[in-house]
Amino acid sequence: MKISVYIATSLDGFIARKNGDLDWLPGSEGDGEGASEDYGYHQFMESVDVLIMGRNSYEMVLSFGEWPYGEKRVIILSSKKIEIPEKIAKNVKSTSSSPAELVDQLRKSGAKHLYIDGGKTIQGFLNAGLIQEMIITQIPILIGSGIPLFGELDIDKKLRLLESRAFESGFLQSKYEIPK
Ligand SMILES: NC(=O)c1ccc[n+]([C@@H]2O[C@H](COP(=O)([O-])OP(=O)(O)OC[C@H]3O[C@@H](n4cnc5c(N)ncnc54)[C@H](OP(=O)(O)O)[C@@H]3O)[C@@H](O)[C@H]2O)c1
Image 1 (spheres, rainbow, N blue to C red):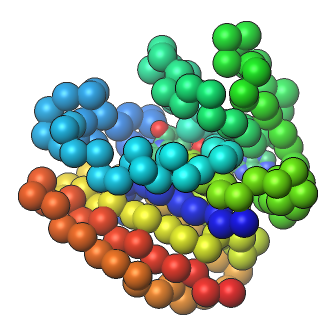
Image 2 (cartoon, rainbow, N blue to C red; image 1 turned 180 degrees about the vertical axis):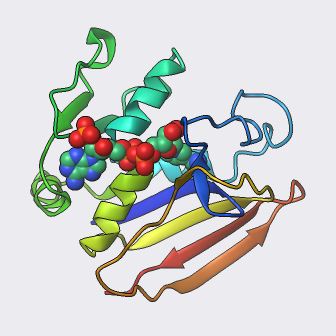
């Protein structure tokens, strides 16, 4: 089973402003610069069985109004009980399991490719040594402060750069492997 991250960051390493705003992310409103190019997102999503995201990311996605993940199986991580709207409840569940427990359950259920999303959530999976691949798209903007992609680690993580692609928009997408 593969476990991946696919995420966009500002050049200074933030995934959202402190209040969660993504206004600095071109195309976040579905228009403007970068909107016609999907940076491999569709292809990536097609290979994913289960999307695991933190409660903060889930709440941000819900606030957009339309649920963007269709029938994709989604698991929300939270220590609390999460209210899930009925129209998405068939495919969306929440859990307070640890990253290791969750990965174990999903492996046993036959999942092949997990997509981990949300800063704190990614940090938890990274620290547990569970991420194998990270596709990071750097947006050429400095926003000064915000919610960071990375945080403290128990031990250093050495990554291997598998490929790097510069787009006309100035976005720079790098794919890393995290060897065991
Ligand atoms: N730039 C991008 O591509 C991108 C992508 C994704 C998200 N974002 C943005 O990032 C922001 C959210 O990131 P974030 O770092 O604040 O948080 P996050 O990872 O989305 O959510 C954190 C929350 O998830 C729960 N959680 C995480 N790991 C857990 C675990 N092991 N066990 C139990 N619960 C766990 C906790 O919820 P409880 O507090 O309920 O326990 C925690 O407070 C949003 O603004 C979102 O829009 C940006």
